[in-house]
Length: 331
Ligand SMILES: Nc1ncnc2c1ncn2[C@@H]1O[C@H](COP(=O)(O)OP(=O)(O)OP(=O)(O)O)[C@@H](O)[C@H]1O
Ligand SMILES: [Mg+2]
Image (cartoon, rainbow, N blue to C red; front, side, top):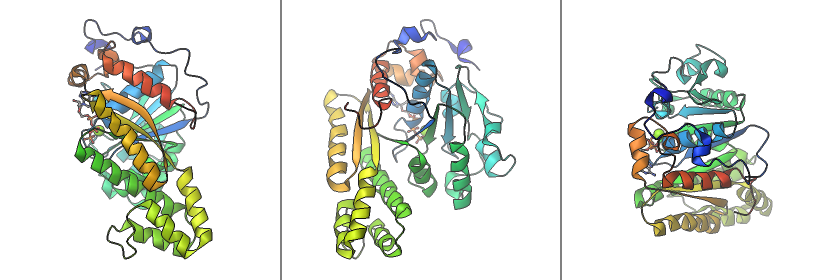
């Protein structure tokens, strides 16, 4: 199935029809960049956002590879109109091939390829540490301008490690309390996991492991508490931990916004993360809840193609302009 065959009257492949910015986004990164899209909760729009961002990046002449890392629940191929992929990640994990490049499949969008996890007999939670590490190394070796990782729901070690391996770590959240709760859990676990992996001292690592247990004996409830406790343990460890925390940053997107005021959750999460986690969170913008969006999903097409004049497209463009700015630049 191709998008051409699926094309609805009025839908268009012409990038000019969706006002793709040829100016004003500044210099784009030249080296390959890996973006991971996570958020903890299922059904919040991770796959939808990944596929549409990928189409957009292809349209601005970037070579893009999307990787479906929702093993066991893969559906990224469907959202890009790719039917029954023949090669999947399990071929790599199970040793049928040792080159990730063998798994690349074209889509009907020029410059956009997919690595599918479809119909995989393996689940993401069953990947061993060595398989995970190998997969991350292989993803890192993909030849492209952008590699986008579509993560599954939950906070499995694999999902967190794939998230942490990306240069741009994108958290997607919807304004619902359940999604917000899951996002905080995801952020906290990923953060502690990063701190533990980057901390060479066994005693400092031990304290981080304690903090990961919510009922820890030190009463550590947040990364800020951990920092205080670490300073008590050793001022040097405290300095090292503070640096790791300050060097970590996330990009935040709010999805399915039904009233403008709901997008305020983006700023709130940003503030909480900065105050209690000591990390930088860049709020990239929001996508409205848009009928045209779910209708495009039904038609198995990215909304960027199926509904180029929808309000969601305008918001997606603004989000991408922010994502494409060099980190630290004022938004
Ligand atoms: N902005 C939006 N407007 C309208 N509908 C939306 C929007 N975002 C998501 N949806 C709806 O939510 C559904 C779920 O989205 P998606 O499959 O991308 O979620 P997910 O986070 O990848 O879920 P999972 O964790 O199960 O893989 C979409 O099929 C679509 O119908
Ligand atoms: Mg998904």
